[in-house]
Amino acid sequence: MKKHKVFIDGETGTVGLQIHSRLKSRNDIEILTIPRELSENLDQRKKLINQAEFVFLCLPDEIAKQSVSVIENPDVRVIDASTAHRTNPEWDYGFPELSKEHKEKIRTSKRVAVPGCYASGFIALIYPLVKASIIPKDHPISCFGISGYSGAGKAFIAEYENSKRHPDLKSGRFYALSQSHKHQPEMQVVCGLERTPMFNPIIDDYYGGMIVSVPLQGFSKAEIETAYKNNYKTGNVKYIESYDEPFLAANALSGSDEMEIYAFGNDERVLLTARFDNLGKGASGAAVQCFDIMVGEK
Image (cartoon, rainbow, N blue to C red; front, side, top):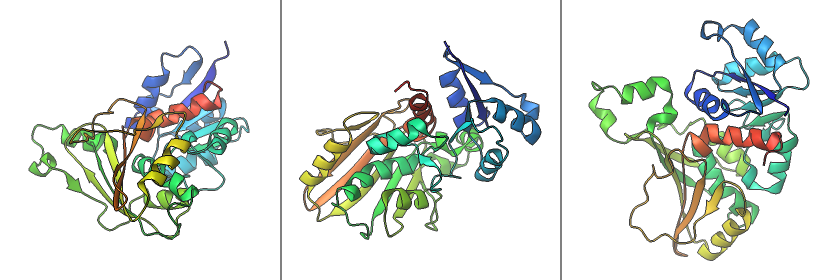
């Protein structure tokens, strides 16, 4: 069996560690490693990047761009989990469930940008409705979401899990109050919207899992349901037709790579909702899913 040489650039971060954990026991992969003390050395990273068949980027945006800039081997295929290339038309968007075209582009791509966590939920909800001309491209859209703290990075995780933490961390906290969250450009561009959506994210005192919701008024619930049924027939995104419980827990899919889509309400008021794991379908799980498609496993 051929072994694919893989280098995870930024392996010590939360997403990098998750990707490594998912790949380390596979017998079709050889993971190229770099000593921790050399992990920020560009010359050493460049060497491994150009030796690899696949490179996962789990880095801050500017460093991710730096890693791409040192690629000299034309056969290197990159899967970027940062924000750096998600709206770049030269990169393919790593959300195979959106359409057959998305999946096929991922399969043959040299450059794949993995969706952001909140953006994954928003785009899963809105893209099919814009595509089906149910929502006009110029419609003003508001979105809110709640997430566990695992997606906030190692420093924030340590802060939340510190026994002497600040009392504010015991409650949900609004952020991105300036309406300039890094996922908003991606949400707008991928869905083909003419307006940047309003976005209200909340980080809360639990480890993993998230819910993203979009409220709509004056749209046919039946048309929305039909669009979701038609769009999400295969893959890790599932449309859930019936849900009778009084609560929807944000952490129910923690540890899963699946996403659940709901359309609650009626023709006057519809609440579109996506539930998934911010580190699963919202990050490392999505990156490995793209990898599997690229190597022909899915």
